[in-house]
Amino acid sequence: MIYFDNNSTTEPFGEITGNKFVNFANASSYHRAGLRARLAVENAREKVAAFIGARPAEIVFTSCGSEANNMAVAGVINHYKYSAGAYKLTVILSAVEHHSILNITHNPAFRDVEFRIAPVDSNGVVDLAALDEMITPPVSLVSVMMANNETGAVMPFEKIGEICARKSVLFHCDAVCASGKISYSLSRFACDLLTVSAHKMYGPKGAACLYIRRGVTVAPLIYGGHQENDMRAGTENIAAIEGFGVCCDIVRRDFDKIAAHYKELKSAFTDELKKCMPRVKINCAGAETLPNTLSLLFEFADEHQSNAFMFNLDMMGLAVSRGAACASSAVAPSHVLLAMGLNKTDAASAVRVSFGINNTIAEAVRAVEIMRAAYETAVSAGRSF
Image (cartoon, rainbow, N blue to C red; front, side, top):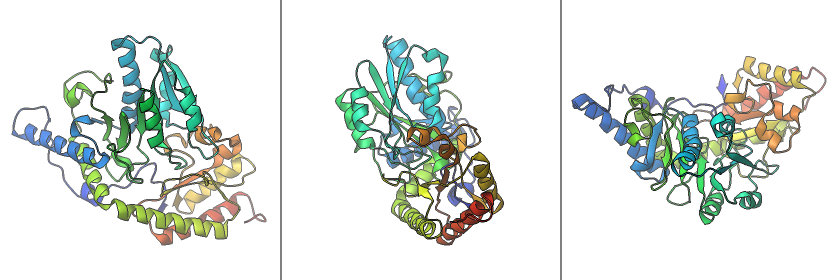
């Protein structure tokens, strides 16, 4: 199986799977084993902070990126509504955010909150001029991802940070898909809240974090003990947190080599695609995209051909996804591609290819061969590229 679905999840580094973490004790316990567990958590916190250019005290560990995203948006809303007494509250989200951001709008507790949706252009990039105009009182928070998980389109996050800072509103950036693929540092751009997840960058599932800039107040989602500086109650998942720290250390150390490998894979795949299947459209071709990600648009007459194509790919040994993994089984077309102006048929049939560090150039070339065969079979004999 050629695994080109690394934006959904990655295979953990050998240093993580091969390491038997022994810090099983409760990090809140005041005995030797508990103190060792506490030390492991704090060591990991330092590594994650160093990776994103933050202070360790600004890192709050969570169970996943979705929880961290909810903590950021819902936490800001709850603080302003119930602690700061701001009864009129507006939050801006981009049209292409992950569902862990967009679906917060369905929370019945926020029925009196105004959510404004910032548009994107045909390349899936947030319209900066439109966003700037939308930020008017009583906007308190803007949430725009660093790079889109479906298309790989990189957002102008540094400029968005500048706009939000100038207008004195909080900026949350979902960096789950971008981390480990493009270079950034919180010491170099204005950002108040930022989300990172371990399993998207060769770490374990079960660990993520929300960066909360010093001085920013966010209401917790989970109440109980005093873990994570009273921001996230619950006994820490020590092994996952340790693994998170390890993967941040490795990616930080080997970032240039990893990025170069992504670019080689993407170049080899794209060159072969243009040669063998020149009519396939690459979405977001006019924008900067992640070095490991491609969104492809094939010509299908209907959803049946599209479904047959995806089935053929799997049977022929190629693992890719249709949009985001968390929504790939849904009947509805991709909200990201619809926001870019694609019709429903195309938005429901685009294919995402996302490379990983363990993939090879030979796999990239072979994947195109599989795609061509799968396509021709799906649309029946007699029509080919």
